[in-house]
Image (cartoon, rainbow, N blue to C red; front, top):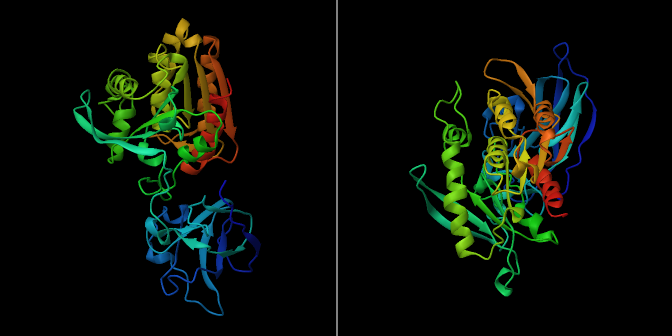
Length: 387
């Protein structure tokens, strides 16, 4: 695991709005490179804008730079440093990105920090040698478009005649490489390649690129149309995965083609479409990894799907891994607030009588994002390969 930044916290005597506090960030040390560059702080307090000129640290005085974030509400406070955009985020001393810095605010607070490195001073790619671009324009006839597809091949693939299970995943640019990943709080990748590199049990991973247009991505991952998205394309997308991509992979790579060795995993809307894939293609997928599924956006359709497929003998022979974060509260289009873990627990309660093997993992501190899915994927992969 990446090194966790340590934060020291102590009181600051400053005036604040009642019920809110001032948080003073005090930077003591930074790398020799880019000494003269402006350093920005970003977090939920400025909508994670990495180059917000209103959040620049002061000039260095006596070896320190400071910034005060005002009117911070009590609770979890997260932030990162940049030099103006997501390509020059702070990093560990060996160049890896990390989770946001965190402190729990209950009073006026000062946070003392050091910056170990800057991401842009290291090679842009973090993908292991086992990751390859299968195609930069793979034909998706069901949707009338082309997509990049990455494939992870186990280290011994070229040296053996062995056949391997296959894990199909969505949001391919976010799984292996910081150079291609995107995110609300910076280009954190899942570390799927590193996780399998270290694991005893190996598999092939096939990862399909998501659309760069976020609204188009949502459209492709919705299985059923709803008032907020009347042109759901999830059925076509899954048809592509099952009837176009899987046959191609099985023909061109040494795979174990049966249900017991064919898996799918995804997060957020990718988690939702993974759930639908399990229910609608139970003869194809033996195990599903459903991380932070956006059930809250689905207008209850997944529950109807569960009730219609729950008696399937093929579903009974499947395995399902659900993950959610305790801090993944979401606001629905109608303004109501839902909790991710509550959505998951309701879906699991409705699904239990199917007889499928079910594992539920809730991280009380988990939020919606790649850093938490990185850890959840490691847990999922251990569960997936324990049989």
